[in-house]
Length: 343
Ligand code: PEP
Ligand code: MN
Image 1 (cartoon, rainbow, N blue to C red):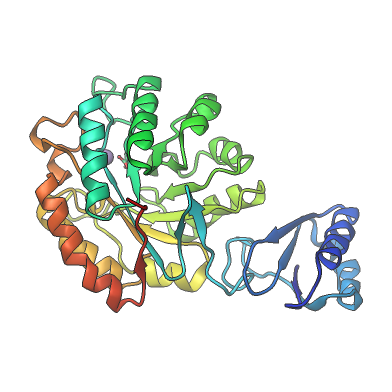
Image 2: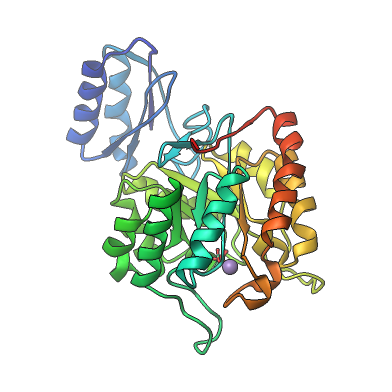
């Protein structure tokens, strides 16, 4: 069930409802919002009848059942777009963000020079993998903690928030210490143990769509994190596997308006992995913005031909500058504002 509070409801009114829901053996989730508070009562639905009596409590506007399997993620639970704040950068609603950086953190010069360049062009967050999920065990696996330290150094130098992948639950504490937005990779989208771990944190989480995951499955993965009490979740469309062999993945742009209908969570699009091809990245970035994306995730490398991973889909600094110039009118046309960090 979902309890919609009146806009003028006080904190005392909210606390009273939360207490009553919890006393029925359910878990109350107060979803953050600017207009009014929404409290989800999640758990055994046998308590449904007792919940109905909450409608007479002070500050309550309405109560109704949640019909979707993903309850906290559903747009029908919370109509207003969620805005997730990462290192003071808001994402969602009118706020559009560009996350950029190399696939893998390789060395100090590589990551710091990339951070400085992407910042100068209007990116607000720096991405870079320190733990890499590779198809081959013989491929570069990441610099691990050394990579996290280099990301921290880049943040100190530029002020850019850090986005990096959490590959396994045993490194959660370590990765969390260095990260402003924890990436759950496509291959881990249904690693439920990992999702439960990040659900216990307050650090925002970016969940990438699995290679063959449906939108419902993606939303159920988000639900794991929300149900744990971490409401700072962003979804990422990064391409799916189809019969088409002309590019690495098929970027499913249908997913953006459809997800906007199904969920209030922000949606970022990754045309780098979504196409696997430098030439396709800018056109697909524009299309993603036109379809309603709240942000982009772009791989950039000072020398793509020497990259340890994903060089063929990494933009040079000059190509990234061109992409930023090309997308600006699209962001404006979509009625959004590019969020940048203070110089
Ligand atoms: C990445 O962002 O470099 C990455 C490995 O992404 P995905 O999990 O989408 O393949
Ligand atoms: Mn990559």
